[in-house]
Image (cartoon, rainbow, N blue to C red; front, side):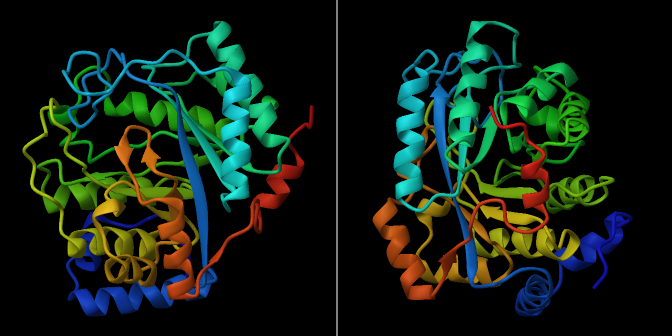
Length: 331
């Protein structure tokens, strides 16, 4: 199967709506063509600055305007973050992602601190990723020079449904940030969340936006909403595993080389459900007991999961990405 960037919404809708067993089979076939199905990348996500965000993302407990149990924490110290990264590496993670609850990156001491964190994690030989909100081209270049490997900035949903979820920035703002990341030659990580009250056509719309980019994102996280008390989406029903499978399989078929990340919502899945997700083309998970502020399976559970399913952790900077890594100036 060739890699395409000219998918139509109709084609993606047809894939998304295939009979589920047929869809999983097709996705598994594409997955095997481009990836080693026995490999899953283990990533760790750390909230380096928590809560107090001025945005109004309806799903997020870190928005200052919602009354949730999230405790506001200022930016962590560089040493604490590097210690956490080292522990993650010992536990088998090959990618370390740092998240800060900011609307956008500002050029100040906090950003300088984040650049130090990036340098430190990069020197450990891990893929270092950040998610810090909106970024200018100049800031993206600074992160690249510090050794940043990937930047996460999710589209969340379709362009049409976006304003139902967020009013404090536009869909184009998100796309501009992804453009700045791409221009800086940083690996792009962008996906979304299902279960926020969107329609199936919104899920197709989000995949269409990602799959028709000039270059597909190297990484596509698929999140199931974890409703948090105090947020506008606290009453949303749980997304079924079949809906997650449709998203994962459709992402895998339309973006064959991307790492499709089984992200938030995994804590509610049993081994069998996760196995189906890996079969449908998911080849990355987040490990550790928390995803920013929502629960995640513990490290030992994941080790057991890997043993049961005969999966092995994917090494850092695998394949073509290794070439990009060598271009990063080592400080």
